[in-house]
Image 1: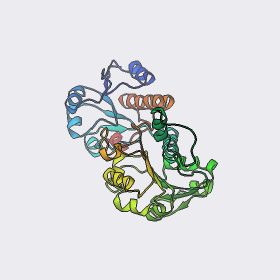
Image 2: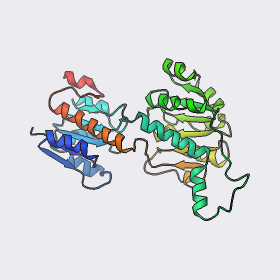
Image 3: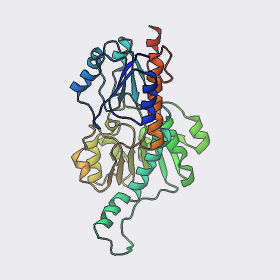
Image 4: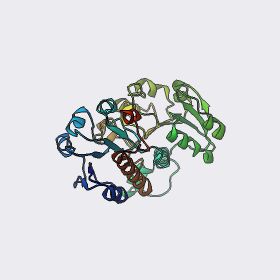
Length: 325
């Protein structure tokens, strides 16, 4: 019971309750902000475990500062903020929170798709400014959704969920992935195609790939030129998958009709060119931001951390090889 853990930013109370029940010391960052790297290095010293966030850069320097720590439990499904090989080398377990945010994030992709297609953010601003003077036949014309073509780039859990939710809109579904998704083909009649074909044919391109060297700037200047001028790009995966400068140019030049983004290349900074455009809907990384989802993430991350400290195998370990050491 003498465990000493640190939480890098406040999470929903049910997660903290799990930690407090099982650990002697549970210290939480009192400020609702991301720690500086200097603060992080200081706070992880002497801890048995750390519950960290996607916004924390967890590298070899942090692991060395946290000498003796057995686990860093990431409060996210993605873990590109963590140097996993460096953790494994030091025998430190890394865990994540997979599955729990699939529906919330796929719902967010749809929220952005609708908002961009039907120009709701733009028209909301227009109405609040007192410019609405009555119905007009050419007022805020947008894109059709029903019976259009949806392109899924990355048909994993979230991409699959987005595609399945298209059934009510009678959409044709194309997907680009290194692996065949027979479930998607069977349930929605999806067709696997290469990325270029998807970009040329889709009315809506929704991105759901993990961030890796081969997916960085997967969608850039060349890819925007392949898309229809009436097409929309939706990104709820990771910001660097899209070249933001190229996207701003494509939107400004009319190469594509619009974009809905929940993630950015250099969060929390947003490409200035995008900020100026009405055909870009910009959300502040809200993919998992529902009460139930964020609470489940908290309890899952805390349970992962406690299991490791008690000598058990964490349910969601990313580097299981450390358990053999």
